[in-house]
Image (cartoon, rainbow, N blue to C red):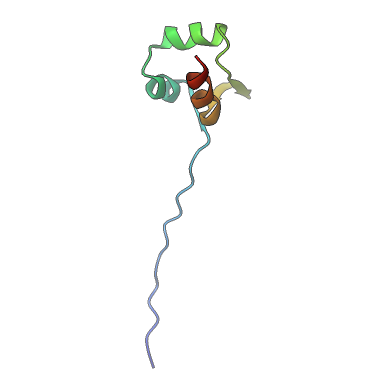
Length: 65
């Protein structure tokens, strides 16, 4: 009889949001510029005391501006 092998499958979960630092890197701008863009309507959300930015919102906002 054949021997069954244990094959580990790596599950990759794509995050749908960025934290503040990741948003800076994604947009290629400074910390101050992210704050300025937020005042100009860049969408963000609060989760507890953390501010997050949905990746889809950032992409759409960049396309519109």
